[in-house]
Every structure is written in structure tokens, then in C-alpha cells.
Image (tube, helix red, strand yellow):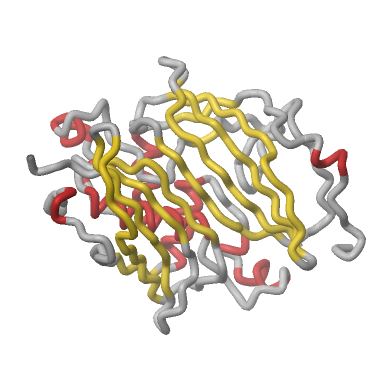
Length: 143
Length: 160
């Protein structure tokens, strides 16, 4: 578990702690079982290649879930996620690092809640953004 | 085939037409399986006693997990698991290739193991970009015990 982050300690432009992932084919199968998405392009190389893909690819929704984990780990037990999402701009493959990152875009208080908006994304080892998106969370105040 | 496809007014008329509801279950086993799928080791997703000590009803669903649709042979898609429902939008999409386009989830409450959700969905958007068709469906999830909307999710698929 990570230390609780508080609203007062967050600054616009600040990067939140990154989360590094690297999917084995076993993890893709675990994800298939967990999500119910058994599309063969994620575990059957021959099938994937017959569809024109170079090989197996990582589920888009798994990258979205990785970004969910990035946010979950950052907001701590007292934070709440209100909204998050991303679009899938390219393919990621097994056994290659996927870096999940986020930057605080805006912070504000409204209706007694402390809101933080973030830009979030996944990134390839060469720094190319693959899954850009946004998130809205609430954080506890120290006071 | 992609050259011949166009979005028609009949297709657009299906925007917002709700499907019949379908039950999604959130169980201790399914929460743990999803958490293993993303590679999380946070006990909040695995250990019921730990989660209860933190004030939750049971282990907490990882972000992005809104339960598993009840599977009925012949009624659910065998590959993706989603329900093939009576009513609601019907699109005859001729493309064979399919990719995820994007996911957007809004939370109105925490989802925990033991929750049983009722989901309805509707077609929210259709767009052609080049030779690719982008289909966006929006789902609303209610807790069946309380009737409260707990989450909304937009899923975009790319057909080509």
C-alpha cells in the first residue's frame, strides 16, 4: 500500500508515480479469464497473424485497467475515482514494457469536495504515447 | 467491402434505444481473477477480512471491472461473453476485423464483491474514419439491491 496523498500536497503540472507493466502471454490469458474477453488475437498467434496482425497483441481494455491501477495506487484508500478513460491509438505486444503515467492538469474545490483532473496515458519504451486519456478523482484534505 | 459501407439514417435512429437489461455479477472469485489479470497485489482486491477492516462490504472491484455478464449458452457471445439481447439496437456490420477503440468509465459508487448489477446499453455513436467504422455503446449499471446507478461506461470498437 502506498502512503495517502492529500489535496494540499498536489500541484498542477506534477507527475504522479508511474506504473511499469510488462505482459507475459500468461498474463494475457489471466486477463482473458478475468474480463471474459477471449478474442483469439490475444493468445493464438496463428489466428492473430491470419487477421493481418504481426502477432499477439495486448488487450486495449487491459491497458485501460492498468491506468485504473495507476490511479488506484495514487489516490490511496481515502481518494475516490470519479471518471477515467482512454483511447487506444496503437498496438502493444507481450514482453514489452508498458509505462503508465499521469500528470495533474487541474485541481479545484467544489461542493465540499477536492477534485483533481489528470492527463493519463500508456507509453512504449521509446516514449511514444499509446493510450491517451483523462481522469477525475477526489482526494482527502489534511485539514 | 469497407468502400461500400455507409452509415444510414436507419442506423442513426437506433441511437439511444435501450437494450433489455442483463445481470452482471461481482463475486469474490471474479474480483480476484480480474485483479490477477491486471497483476495487482493490493489485498483490497483479494482479502475479504482486510477489505472489511478498511470499511468496505467485501473485496473491492479493481477500477474498470463492472462485473461479469451472466452467461447463458446461446444467449451470450462465446468469444466476448457479452449478451446478445432481445430488443435494442441491431447493426449489420460487414467488417471482419475488430479492435478496441477506447473505454471511458464514470463511477458513482464503489463496486464490491457480492454486488449484483443490472446493465442496459444503447448505441451512442457511429463514425467512419477512412475505411474504419467506430461504434460507441454506452452502458448504465445499477445495483439491483438498491436501484442506484453505480457506474456508466462507454466502449468504442473499431471495425475494419
